Image (cartoon, rainbow, N blue to C red; front, side, top):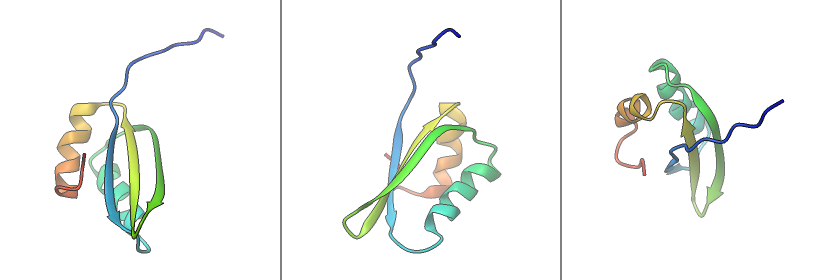
Length: 72
């Protein structure tokens, strides 16, 4: 099996560390039809950082506008 290497874009948000927040964020992306190659989340102080590697950067950025200014 051949290995493939490609360049990808990486984004993250910091959101309150409260139940259901991750599901809300992922639901927004799901409803917009965004496919993720990978994502992860971990606590960062009193917040949570969620990292995203989208398959289509343009579609991700369009959908992420609904998430507000916390996207980086």
